[in-house]
Length: 326
Image (spheres, rainbow, N blue to C red):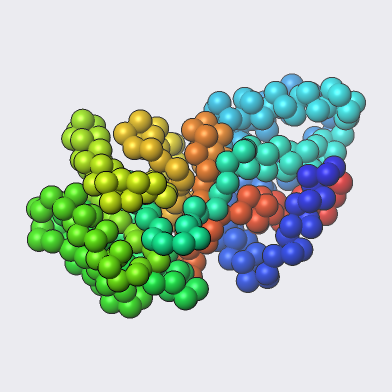
């Protein structure tokens, strides 16, 4: 069980503060999902079709995603056959390993930051998912790490969007580049890039409008923003983070599919993960869209936005016994 042991070693090396944030933030998922899994494993005496079907239902109910669950079940059946496993309890570490493998893939979950010069992070997503709050919290994180940060109010269409970002700018102590409501978003982004370069800013966080009523308009607007960014910094944006609300479940998956077609999304910022019992949506997004989850919202406090860690995620969910047995 190499990966299983690596998981435990990874957890041991993490700070207790980060572990507790994941554990506390995922308590609803743990209570709603793992209790059902534990119950199934404890009362089932043999691995048969009935066992597989019930485990499949539990995983789908946790928003792991139908396609992901079917792939996962095929992998479990194969392991059972190869290792001649008869007791359900023996599947615990294998289930844990397989979920970690699905989450990790071959793409980094770390935010792509430039070692020198300006790092540009563009945020996309529909209204109401916590995009502006995520930007504010990420700005706070980088400021606390000693970075020079600037924000750009590129959502010029939603009423109050500019003011909301300004409030966050004041809270964390960073400048916000803005225009009047209704202005051209690309012009705001251009001014922000010019200002950030002239002031020696390390990280520029760009907000954008979250309109989905017309996919063509969305693509045109984003394409214009991309052209402006690349004209100023050829290899930017260095990240395009799609902000999704974990409590919307499969709807978040549909949003991710649309934005993946409309923008070159490099990662997911999943908000309100603490507010759902269906945290399996993280696995579905990663596996079905091949986009890594890079940030997760685990609470309402300023420092509750955390960089995603697959081992911490799985450990936080399966903490009640899965990691104590092999």
